Amino acid sequence: MTTLYDRIGGAPVIETLIPAFYARVLADPNLSPFFKHASMDSLQGMQQQFFAMALGGPVAYTGRPLGSVHHGRGITTSHFSAFVKHLLETLSAIGISPQEADEVIARIDTFANEITGTSY
Ligand code: HEM
Image (tube, rainbow, N blue to C red; front, side, top):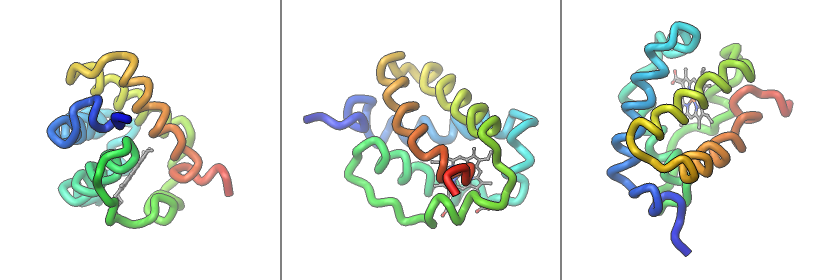
Protein backbone atom coordinates (compact mmCIF):
# COMPACT_ATOMS: atom_id res chain seq x y z
CA MET A 1 0.00 0.00 0.00
CA THR A 2 1.26 3.46 -0.85
CA THR A 3 1.90 5.70 2.13
CA LEU A 4 0.49 9.20 2.52
CA TYR A 5 4.13 10.37 2.36
CA ASP A 6 4.50 8.87 -1.13
CA ARG A 7 1.08 10.06 -2.32
CA ILE A 8 1.84 13.70 -1.53
CA GLY A 9 5.22 13.47 -3.28
CA GLY A 10 7.75 12.29 -0.69
CA ALA A 11 10.95 14.07 0.34
CA PRO A 12 10.87 16.98 -2.15
CA VAL A 13 7.38 17.95 -1.03
CA ILE A 14 8.27 17.76 2.68
CA GLU A 15 11.34 19.92 1.95
CA THR A 16 9.10 22.51 0.27
CA LEU A 17 6.28 22.25 2.79
CA ILE A 18 8.17 22.83 6.06
CA PRO A 19 9.94 26.15 5.22
CA ALA A 20 6.75 27.51 3.58
CA PHE A 21 4.77 26.47 6.65
CA TYR A 22 7.14 28.11 9.17
CA ALA A 23 7.22 31.30 7.10
CA ARG A 24 3.46 31.52 7.76
CA VAL A 25 3.79 30.53 11.43
CA LEU A 26 6.47 33.18 12.04
CA ALA A 27 4.35 35.82 10.28
CA ASP A 28 1.52 35.19 12.77
CA PRO A 29 1.91 37.55 15.76
CA ASN A 30 -0.05 35.08 17.88
CA LEU A 31 2.53 32.32 17.29
CA SER A 32 5.84 34.02 16.48
CA PRO A 33 6.76 34.83 20.13
CA PHE A 34 7.02 31.09 20.88
CA PHE A 35 9.84 30.79 18.34
CA LYS A 36 11.79 33.89 19.40
CA HIS A 37 14.67 31.92 20.91
CA ALA A 38 14.41 28.79 18.75
CA SER A 39 17.06 27.74 16.27
CA MET A 40 14.80 27.69 13.22
CA ASP A 41 17.21 25.71 11.01
CA SER A 42 17.51 22.91 13.50
CA LEU A 43 13.76 23.00 14.29
CA GLN A 44 12.83 22.77 10.62
CA GLY A 45 15.26 19.92 10.05
CA MET A 46 13.71 17.99 12.94
CA GLN A 47 10.21 18.88 11.77
CA GLN A 48 10.98 17.53 8.28
CA GLN A 49 11.98 14.23 9.85
CA PHE A 50 8.94 14.25 12.11
CA PHE A 51 6.46 14.93 9.31
CA ALA A 52 8.09 12.35 7.02
CA MET A 53 7.83 9.73 9.77
CA ALA A 54 4.27 10.73 10.78
CA LEU A 55 3.09 10.40 7.15
CA GLY A 56 4.55 6.91 6.84
CA GLY A 57 7.82 7.77 5.12
CA PRO A 58 11.07 5.76 5.45
CA VAL A 59 12.55 8.27 7.87
CA ALA A 60 13.46 8.00 11.56
CA TYR A 61 12.79 11.01 13.78
CA THR A 62 15.97 11.73 15.76
CA GLY A 63 14.71 14.74 17.76
CA ARG A 64 13.54 15.03 21.35
CA PRO A 65 10.16 13.64 22.50
CA LEU A 66 7.37 16.09 21.60
CA GLY A 67 6.14 16.34 25.19
CA SER A 68 9.46 17.44 26.64
CA VAL A 69 10.00 19.95 23.80
CA HIS A 70 6.60 21.63 24.11
CA HIS A 71 5.38 21.41 27.70
CA GLY A 72 5.80 24.43 29.94
CA ARG A 73 5.76 26.88 27.01
CA GLY A 74 2.13 27.89 27.49
CA ILE A 75 0.95 26.39 24.20
CA THR A 76 -2.87 26.20 24.35
CA THR A 77 -5.32 24.31 22.15
CA SER A 78 -6.06 27.65 20.50
CA HIS A 79 -2.37 28.08 19.56
CA PHE A 80 -2.39 24.51 18.30
CA SER A 81 -5.47 25.23 16.12
CA ALA A 82 -3.85 28.33 14.66
CA PHE A 83 -0.69 26.31 13.89
CA VAL A 84 -2.74 23.61 12.12
CA LYS A 85 -4.71 26.24 10.17
CA HIS A 86 -1.41 27.57 8.78
CA LEU A 87 -0.45 24.01 7.89
CA LEU A 88 -3.69 23.48 5.97
CA GLU A 89 -3.24 26.77 4.11
CA THR A 90 0.37 25.88 3.24
CA LEU A 91 -0.64 22.43 1.95
CA SER A 92 -3.18 24.09 -0.30
CA ALA A 93 -0.71 26.79 -1.43
CA ILE A 94 1.86 24.19 -2.52
CA GLY A 95 -0.74 22.28 -4.51
CA ILE A 96 -1.66 19.33 -2.29
CA SER A 97 -5.22 18.17 -3.02
CA PRO A 98 -7.89 18.95 -0.40
CA GLN A 99 -8.38 15.22 0.29
CA GLU A 100 -4.71 14.57 0.93
CA ALA A 101 -4.39 17.79 2.93
CA ASP A 102 -7.20 16.58 5.18
CA GLU A 103 -5.38 13.29 5.69
CA VAL A 104 -2.17 15.13 6.65
CA ILE A 105 -4.09 17.29 9.13
CA ALA A 106 -5.78 14.21 10.62
CA ARG A 107 -2.33 12.65 11.24
CA ILE A 108 -0.89 15.81 12.76
CA ASP A 109 -3.98 16.32 14.95
CA THR A 110 -3.25 13.03 16.70
CA PHE A 111 -0.28 14.77 18.39
CA ALA A 112 -2.38 17.64 19.83
CA ASN A 113 -2.36 16.29 23.38
CA GLU A 114 1.38 15.73 23.33
CA ILE A 115 1.96 19.34 22.28
CA THR A 116 -0.51 21.11 24.57
CA GLY A 117 -0.14 18.70 27.49
CA THR A 118 -3.90 18.38 27.80
CA SER A 119 -3.73 14.63 28.36
CA TYR A 120 -1.67 15.06 31.53
C1 HEM B 1 1.52 18.60 15.95
C2 HEM B 1 2.10 19.81 15.96
C3 HEM B 1 3.58 19.98 16.24
C4 HEM B 1 4.60 19.15 15.94
C5 HEM B 1 4.56 17.78 15.23
C6 HEM B 1 5.81 19.80 16.42
C7 HEM B 1 7.08 19.27 16.28
C8 HEM B 1 8.24 19.87 16.71
C9 HEM B 1 9.56 19.32 16.53
C10 HEM B 1 9.87 18.01 15.82
C11 HEM B 1 10.45 20.18 17.10
C12 HEM B 1 11.97 20.02 17.16
C13 HEM B 1 12.36 19.16 18.34
C14 HEM B 1 13.86 19.05 18.54
O1 HEM B 1 14.58 20.00 18.24
O2 HEM B 1 14.32 18.01 19.06
C15 HEM B 1 9.66 21.28 17.64
C16 HEM B 1 10.19 22.37 18.29
C17 HEM B 1 9.46 23.45 18.71
N1 HEM B 1 8.10 23.61 18.64
FE1 HEM B 1 6.80 22.30 17.86
N2 HEM B 1 5.49 20.99 17.00
C18 HEM B 1 4.13 21.15 16.91
C19 HEM B 1 3.39 22.22 17.37
C20 HEM B 1 3.91 23.34 17.95
C21 HEM B 1 3.15 24.50 18.37
C22 HEM B 1 1.62 24.63 18.23
C23 HEM B 1 4.03 25.40 18.90
C24 HEM B 1 3.80 26.77 19.45
C25 HEM B 1 2.77 27.52 19.14
C26 HEM B 1 5.36 24.79 18.82
C27 HEM B 1 6.51 25.38 19.26
C28 HEM B 1 7.78 24.83 19.16
C29 HEM B 1 8.98 25.51 19.61
C30 HEM B 1 9.06 26.89 20.25
C31 HEM B 1 10.05 24.64 19.32
C32 HEM B 1 11.54 24.91 19.53
C33 HEM B 1 12.00 24.43 20.85
C34 HEM B 1 13.48 24.80 21.04
O3 HEM B 1 13.74 25.92 21.52
O4 HEM B 1 14.34 24.02 20.67
N3 HEM B 1 5.24 23.55 18.24
N4 HEM B 1 8.33 21.07 17.39
